[in-house]
Image (cartoon, rainbow, N blue to C red; front, side, top):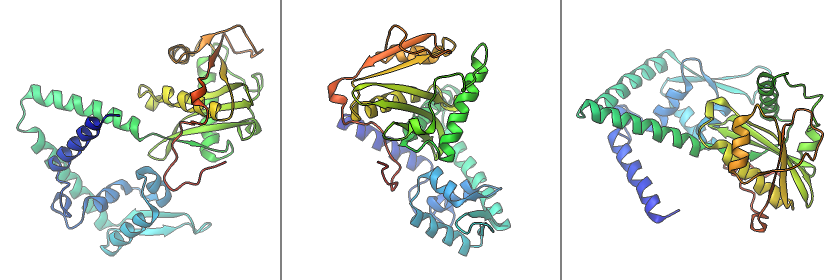
Length: 313
């Protein structure tokens, strides 16, 4: 990454901040800064659990608590604690909060209209196209990866999506009982590991390894949500898993896949995997691939963790 790249991002951020009125502590000429207004908007008309809101925006719990308390003092929201578990708290907008959120929407529309108004139709179209492309890659940059036990709710959900998608795409369906096993015990250290990718706290992809010391690691359970395909997430997830394989001593990664998964086959080939003779009796496989890992990869597991989350060993 070049210093000029960093400066370009900073210039872009300053221009956006000026264009949409982020400078100052009265966002959209209201009596609160943007942080409070954004949280008010994110709560939405139906409310949201505090932990989900914190994960979605990547906020520090102390900061979120202070903002929620401030909005509560203004009469804009209330906090409801679950009867069965006092740790589960939901924030709900009051009638006044709903009116304020509607007003913020109206003023935000006005700011957007003022930004577009000086431009010709052609200029406006190019700007909107550039915005859509920028938003696409910013979404990709917001994705975070975590090594996670395969028994967590998010992990189980991702693995279930994997099975369901294969069932839809394979010619004769997919029965995991017929496939080579990748049980939870196989995907937890020291036998293996599972990586979950999240966007704004929501799981959007997963991939796993079965580890065998210096012998080739086995790539398993690669799945990317259709909602985020086209963002290069599969390539990043694959690189992360290769990094983990090298960090745990594997000299190579191998996998088998079905011919119906054309995108996966293309990804593996483009990522340096070469097709080899069958090394397993996986009944759903049509292709077997292997990639030798460069020695420099050892010890470099390319996985980011959420700020504040303890590393799992």
